[in-house]
Length: 90
Image 1: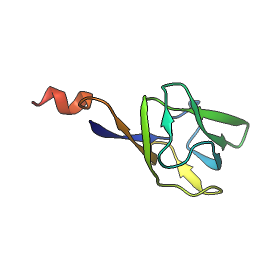
Image 2: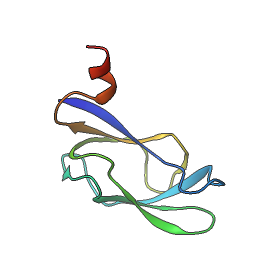
Image 3: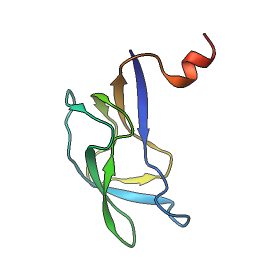
Image 4: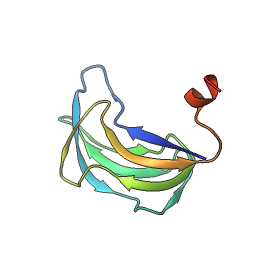
């Protein structure tokens, strides 16, 4: 098993930050890739944020109502197997 960071992706070329409106998951929840884990708001639109991994949420690093920069870690997830990057150096 390995831990991966879930980061805020850029949803458009102009997006630099977003507000984390609400978490749709809690620590300990099992999620599948594509499951909605949070609702975020940019200056133009509110949208759902999907999990990029299958796994178990182990940490929520941002509080609801906080502003988040693109690329900032939102949560940590425990995934099965080794991380892709880690396996390149084994």
